[in-house]
Image 1 (tube, one colour):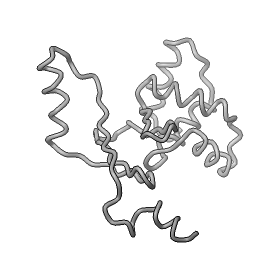
Image 2 (spheres, rainbow, N blue to C red):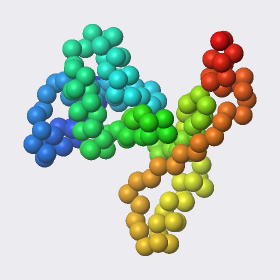
Image 3 (cartoon, one colour):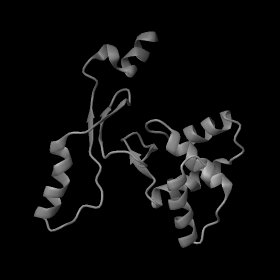
Length: 154
């Protein structure tokens, strides 16, 4: 296991929820935490298979849900009816700008946005546990948009 601290969090969570503690779950955890950017469960499964892993697709799906529940990764939906995941482990809070044409996702951090959830929640007598801020837009430079690049090839 590459991520000792994360492994302890997952092990404690599995014990507390009376889930089995298996080496495959920690293999999925390592792969998910090592993955750069956003990924789907099938993406991770294929990547692991290409690395000669013997973990089943069902184990990948189930373990990703467990990793979400113990807050090591986050589940995201960027409007494409696909569930995507990203690591929370040692990562700063950030927001997303998503191209509605090509699906490109750009992560950003802005102090104004970072303050906004707490201000809104406090004004309505809530306490923020987490938030997700996604801006859906279109690539301004069409030459950079993967959607338009693909259309030009056809």
